[in-house]
Image 1 (spheres, rainbow, N blue to C red):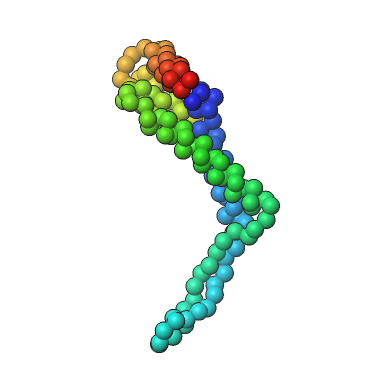
Image 2 (cartoon, rainbow, N blue to C red):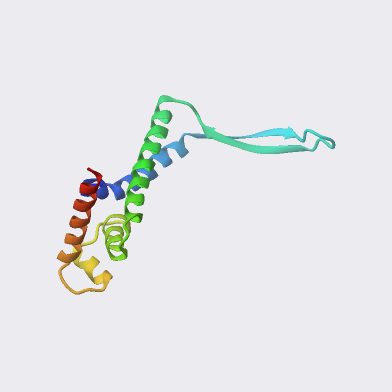
Amino acid sequence: MTKAELEQYRSIVREIDEVRARLNAAAVHDVVTGSDSEYPYVQRHMRIGGVERSDTNAGDMALLRRLEGQKDRIEAFIDGIPDSVTRRIFRMRYIDGDVRPSWQWIAFKIGVSGDGSTERKKVDRYLKVSRNSRK
């Protein structure tokens, strides 16, 4: 995993929401009438819905699957970090919230004083070690 991939997380989440909104806007709904297959044959109204097949919708569905895969890989990478402090730093920096916090803010939330350079170096070292262990 690289910093560039991790920094994409928030954008991926927003894009997933946008694609889902497009698919929901293209959804079709209707009500059909049917009955039980056995006596007393009670008539029922059932709602059905779905997305019409089109090139645009098929592309959006494929994009949604790809984006969700990227999101899941990033979350799995961070969840797989064994050290609690390092995992918290990664989660605060790359996943939680709407904006990326400063290193100093992360240091404050972790409970240490300083400018956050220790936390930044911890992330850099972990990424370097995880990259080397994959080779």
